[in-house]
Amino acid sequence: MSVAAIKKSPLIEVRNLNLHFGAFHALKNVSVSFEAGQLIGLVGDNGAGKTTLIKVLSGIHKPNSGEVYFDGEKVREFHPKLAIKFGIETLQQSVGLCDNLSIARNFYLGREPIKRWFGIPFLDFKKMREASTKVIRTFGLRDNVSADDLVEMLSGGERQSIKIGRAVEFKNRVVIMDEPTNHLSVREREHVNELAQQMRDQGLLVIYITHDIHQVHKLADRIVIMENGEKVTDVAKHEMTADELEEVIRCGGRVVEKASEVAPS
Ligand SMILES: Nc1ncnc2c1ncn2[C@@H]1O[C@H](COP(=O)(O)OP(=O)(O)OP(=O)(O)O)[C@@H](O)[C@H]1O
Image (cartoon, rainbow, N blue to C red; front, side):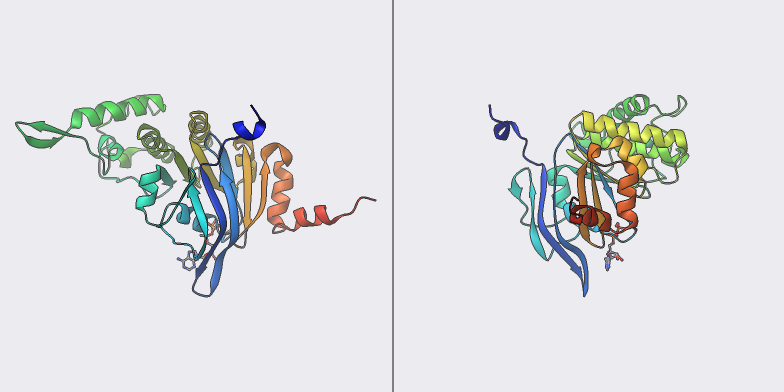
């Protein structure tokens, strides 16, 4: 079999994407592709366009021009339903869980299982408890945490674990982690990073947005750097060290251009 025949096609492919907020050009001709079973570090300074790109992928923003393909299918309508249809889950630090509901209820938020009793529908609490208890144990939350506890009792890392467990349980194909370890302790950070790698190992596409190039360099298969609405670098992890990539970010992508411009003496 030829190499071309076994090469996997990207799960998400973005071609020549442009997006304007009024007069402001937020995404400038961005082309990038992401494959299933990869952990991609999406890095760049404040305002680089990382979140804007992700919001296009999850149907929140409609691009002005360019194309997005999901699993080879051209996306024709940009709508948050897009994310549900394609199994894209975005994990953001501050949203996604309701503090005043139990872990079990949060686990099934918006997808509550129903059972019927003489034809009358009831929430299936037993099922919700069983599934969320499994996640609590698998994802290493404290022993005394139970599915009936309110989410407000959980630490930042435990909250992230619940969201990650939910993404895996509901068979999402893409998990976008937006600054997933902000405000977490060292141990919690390590735990969340391990979970990110586990999801990748299970075949999910994980897009990991962060400012911490050193942290993501340890985890990622590929690093994509954005600057000022443009993609300035897209390399396999082994092609550049974390220090070299940090220099690219510090210089707004100019280091890469300079290096390729230097003629051999
Ligand atoms: N809804 C909006 N209306 C107008 N401008 C916006 C909007 N959303 C984002 N922007 C602008 O687009 C640019 C890119 O923002 P974006 O949030 O994508 O950056 P980012 O790389 O995610 O940055 P950070 O790391 O700070 O979150 C910024 O200059 C921002 O002010």
